[in-house]
Structure formats: structure tokens, C-alpha cells
Amino acid sequence: MDPTTRARRPRTAALRLAGGPGDMAFWVAELAHRAADPGAVARAVAAIEPAAAPLLRPAAGAPPESLVALDPLRDRPYLDEDPDAAVLVDVLLTGLSRPRAEYPDSRVWAADRIDGPDDLAGRHRAVRALLDLDSIYATPECRARLEGRARYNLATEERATRG
Image (tube, rainbow, N blue to C red; front, side, top):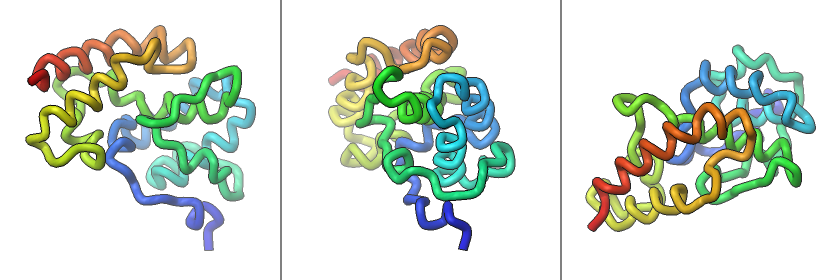
């Protein structure tokens, strides 16, 4: 059995924020210099999104369970404290900055945190939780290139879900 098979976990709704295998592979490569162990980040992404594995070509072995278990909406690792986790969470949140027409709203990425697509209060809380952060992203690259669009998308959704 492939060692990453054991480390895979069910795909949570929040993982639908990641921009797909190609985007994930791009951001893993783009942020590799920020990670303490870029191979561990690549293995974690391959375990979370198996379709990204051929693009990443991670080294053999299982990813650290601590990385695979991260929840990008709950866990906010700091780059200087846990660089691998910070890079992984940034990769998993890149979908927040998609163009407005492609942005998956909170009905998609917060589905396991709300009481259904009509739960405006729950959706509002999920969106506010991200908007209330000093910064959505931990890495300078994501802050510079993605933060503005992500905040715009979230603010637009926040207004639509305000009760």
C-alpha cells in the first residue's frame, strides 16, 4: 500500500478552497523556500489532494500527520513558529482569492460548519472569522498577491450574508 494512503483524510468542505491540483502544485513550489521541509509539505498536499501528486512528485514516505490533520479554517500557524504548517494552510486557502466568478462561497467551503446553505448567520460567522484575522495568509508572497482579492471576495459575501 502507498504510504500516503494511510495519511489521507476525508476531504473537508474547507479543502474545496484550494485552487485545484495545478494551483496547489504551483503554490507549493512558489512557497517551498519558506518551508522548513518542503518535501513534507508536498507529501501532505499529495495526501490531501491525490490528483496533485503527479504534479508535485513528492518523495516517498508518509507526510507528517500533524500537517495532514490541519484545518485551514481553524488552524492559523505562524511562519516563524511552524513554517511547514503555515505554508500548507496558505496553499489550502488560495481559493479565497479566485476571480469573483470562480470564488466558491461559504456554502461550499464552510458546508461542514453551517446548518445548510440557507443558514445565513452561520455563513456570516464563517466569513467574519476570516475577515477578523489580521492577515488571512502567513507568507509574505500570499499576503502580497492574494490577500486583497481574498478580502474583497469575503467582504462581498459578508455583505450578502449580513442578517
